[in-house]
Length: 221
Length: 221
Image (cartoon, rainbow over all chains, first blue to last red; front, side, top):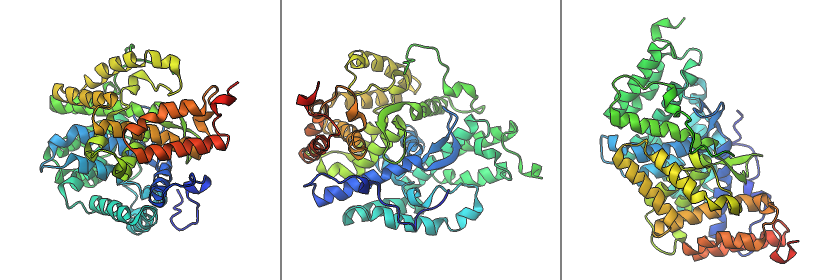
């Protein structure tokens, strides 16, 4: 997928003029909300469980929010669930301009941070200044994984595709070159949020490998 | 769209056995999370702004959550934003079994409540008992619109498709028989949450009508 963080694509909001008399602050907020509609068309690698198509970032983010409501009891440290919800709602927004970077694509990962930083600069600048800083801080918090809320949000982000892959008897685990060890390594951040969920995640991966849905490391050709 | 709240469709989670040793409570929570994947395939009438297709309930719910983060400053009463987020994340889940009821479909509205109550009974029963009651209470709170958080969540639910219709120069406003007055009537619950957002919503509708995107009441044949 091309990354259009450098191009001059007009904003979605440019297509239709806002009503006369819309206050400047509200106009900027609405333009940001409209631009965010694009997240519904950033597609991930993971296939859905409920249909034969790939998942988009917006519905993925919603699924993480729902998981947060169900699973916060497993957090090893107390977390503010409302804060975790805010983090997961915001965490993928930069992919509107930076594109989704596949977890097992090490080449794309090399410039991922730079692409996403530029995308964040561009996207959050649509908001009024105070909110630009607030949303940027939420996204930075998620990425840095220093707070208990960010660690838990990241764990949701890693556990959710694991459920999709397990339910699909492989999914992106079947990517050439990916082994059980790679999956365990990429998912190990779950451990930083919840020992219980990390135990469950390992069970999913080991069971998947036992079922032949992802190759064991020593079976790599 | 058929409503399958009465049928015996197996759960999505039935397709793949959970790993041996998964604790009973966690197994039920995961089965609920997996079943919720179906919300990504409940389609609404509203067209997206960013692509030529209809919106699904999961990405719609995410969009309401993002709007909540941006717009709570306009609430006329103080609201707990984390609570509003929980309400919008949960508010459409029952449509997995009850289907989406189009805002301007008065025939479908007649049995909507009964269909949705049965769907809620079925869906939330997947969860452990304490969470079944918690999620059911969240959904009941949203529907009752008694708390400031529920009123604000409902306002987001009404404002978001207004943005899509306005940006699409009509969208579902062009449904035969729908007039500017109908739209104003259906959207007036926004007023119960925010005078500022209600003023903006009316500006969208009036400007849309002035542009010919929705007929004035006196122009109905």
